[in-house]
Image (cartoon, rainbow, N blue to C red):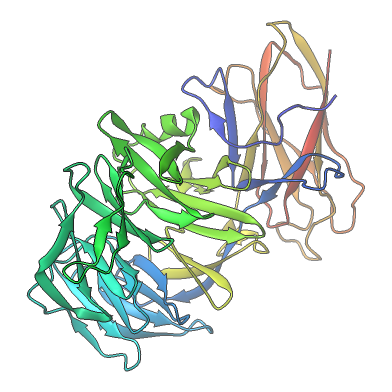
Length: 476
């Protein structure tokens, strides 16, 4: 019989005895035609190809592509422009060495802020670089560009302020505003659909450009959003809306998106349980990207050492991670910052100075094994003892690499099972997915014993294409 639910997203509950579903380095794609072999397939997430390595010391702190298509990465003290061939050039130096850097451009200038009282301005036409010296400048955690203005939060206050029109070095200390709907501290901003979302710790208020000569942005009346933000750099736009890690007067740790001006929960109880186990979540960083019709919200937790991804196409979550071969524990994904440039998804993280291209055709992370895991829902029948005679995994076989004694020539699939709610796991049992061209191979395991409630887990670590279509189980 078909193994119901084998193809699905991540959902590990507070008690793994209830649900212990994992989906690591795999994402689900629905069969839209309705004529496929199954309703959905799990495909391997992108691997990482080294694009360039920026000078040490230091680690990557942010990535940005200007409206004109120029790509910039901050690494350590340096602001670097990277070019299509993987070369780079230092454009300027920051005074800070660590922490996320926010960047925005107005078409003429690129402005960088790092959460201090400093700001750094690059004139794009001449590449002239200077620290912002205007007496009205207060620094910022986040900068966005809207209608020719740079807009920044004033750190530690309930205020935000703006630059001069197309003048990123000019600031008037008297030109600022507050979120009037609720007097909480402003910690983040985002510009979307020509509106400015001002995120406080407990609420969010939309603003629009009214053209007022005294201060251009005014609150959109009647649109207070009763959800603030828990992590400054968790807000990101995709799929015609905005996503963020939320907080309000009642608590925090849920992921929201806007439906009009109404916050809509898109995290699940299982994801919320995972998030709330981390020692801190205010350091979370998010980016969004789209590929082949999927829009992904990628949320990384540096302290929590985890990366969770929401797919707007399926409304399901999966995890991206690397498996530490020494500890056997999952580590957060190397990609924490993203920019789209040169037809590539360029990504980097705060772990080192490497910049990668994230590509679906890549089956390793810069040469390191990219382990993919699916733990399927528990099989049970009212505590009746079930005998498991055969499990067959339906996947694309015959995708082994061509020639040589190397990983992937005859890719392997590992199976384990748990009869106690995922607390302990059986020994590994391996079968081959076939060398190149052996498309009709069947990946199956026999004589699997008996259980009252069993969860199966499969892993594939060979550097080959992965497509899991379904599974069949024979129980009696």
